[in-house]
Image 1 (cartoon, rainbow, N blue to C red):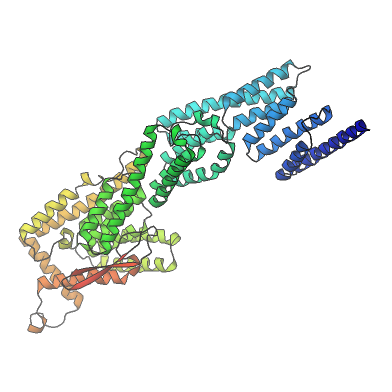
Image 2: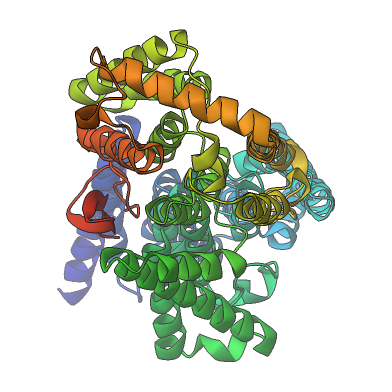
Length: 586
């Protein structure tokens, strides 16, 4: 009776196992991989460890093999490899599952293990009676791909060492078609993308591959990680490091700091610090310190600007620029903020130079372009103002609201009208002087500005270690802008240092103002006496304030993460008059 019951149970188990195998195969064929895995798992769990029926054992082996194939499809290579090994343990001569085991190792970027499986499978296929040509062909193809990945790695490493990031990326993309879950190739790709300044792609790569990497990770892979970002026993480490660097380079320093701090917490909690070299930990600490210092300088500069301490604000922004030369968007913000502070101080040449640097570092920086338009309008360089406004309009067409675009068009129309009037530039404003200044003051101002804005010094804060055409283009643009500014400074000095030329210039300025005011009465009468010195001061200030308020959308103040959102006001006083410069929270 007991024997009969046992036999009945075996038959029942086998029937359940076969049914699960059949339904799993159907679900796999229809693309329903979760359901297929569920059926295969049900079949595997229905077999007791003490099972001796060869039919049931073979069916369970097939369930393991097929579940491995299902898990491979969804990227769970490490679990699939475990199923392959269990199937091999049941039937060492089942070559199909050995092919799958080799494929799992290859996808994970473990060429030595993959090579062993493919070679063993090829030998077994050749030695078997009649041979299995299909298995032998697949094993040979696996061997070829494995050897190819070794070549890809060597070539990619050589190209990366030579800073040929474009060629490296091309090689790695080909390698990842064979080894999509290889931590080595993924890390090298992140490094290549950083070298190409494709920072958004770095962040996306790290985010999209982290889940599968953690699922497929084992401690044995630690020694395979290439020393680079942050090697260790977890795929989260180098991804956090790469992400923080990418965020830093795109100017998102707060997010970069948060990422770095989370990395530090992760290392402390996981105990992975023991797997990292002391030099690497020191680099991490230094980088965190750098980001914190930059944010502190920037915050201090914004607070000083808000309080009306513009000289102090300039000092803070300058200190930040002095310790950072890599994060271009962040540097562009610092230059633009310093330009706002310099403008508030009346240092127009300094403000123009910094605005130009900001635009060169970030060509799509709307606020920096708009600020440079304002500055060129103040000195009556309408040709350059029109050029910048056309550039601004091309950006606003696709990136801003209709109102912003409309305001930019109005500014361009106004600047084009002024350009037709052929107004001379304001030489006094360029040198930061009043019309009552002495010849000695003119000479002193010129020497100071000529030294500061000489074209040879223009790129001192610009990245010089990047190399490549991109870095050269930025340097060339900044130098061209500096040469134009230097020429304006030289022309201003040439006019104001020559008594005769200065007298003619001042007379022309007086006449221009009279015409603009539409004066029809006798300007020499007592009620209409024109004091040139005080009137020039008042006229220039009225023009400055009026222009600022006319275009409220592009006010002057420190920048923010959202460059054109204005929340605070700073007030600059001059002779009893005041002008407001919008200030942004950062």
